[in-house]
Amino acid sequence: MPSRKQRRRREKERRHEYEVLYVDEEGRELDPAEVETETQAAKESRRREADGDGRQRPARQPGKRGGGGGTPLRVVPPPSWRRVLRRGAIFAPFMFLTLWLLGKGHLTSTAIVLETIWLLALFVPFSYAIDRMMYRRYLKQTGGAPPARQPRA
Image (cartoon, rainbow, N blue to C red):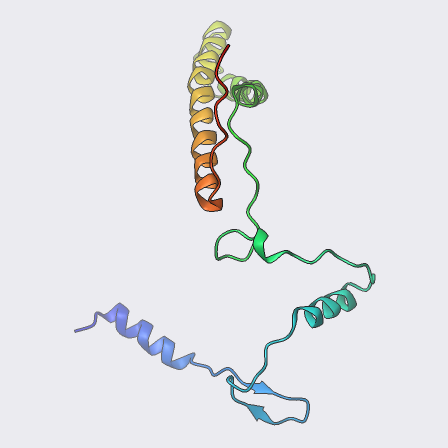
């Protein structure tokens, strides 16, 4: 037996049911099967008219898309310690400021600096691990292979 919550949801779905209705230029109702899909060129010309600037925009290439969402995948660069250390240098003042504001009466300035260093020691390797995970996920989605390692001389 459905619960009260399930019954209310079902009643709400019935109240809010709707049908998709297509009408042609002459005002006749059309079945969804009769409706033709617009061509890509017609969509682009309508988009140009809506923008009003008349500029030509490059058409999207169908092979450049990511998953099923329809938006192109963002290129994820391979992880690097240099980028992670730069990110740590950017976040260090924010960490220091946060600790200084939160520990005003409880921590000395030396303790705040030591806590900031401790947070950075946790943040930097964790950030590298996240970058590595995101890069591997990107390679898996695109079907690409990781770049070959160069032998150290």
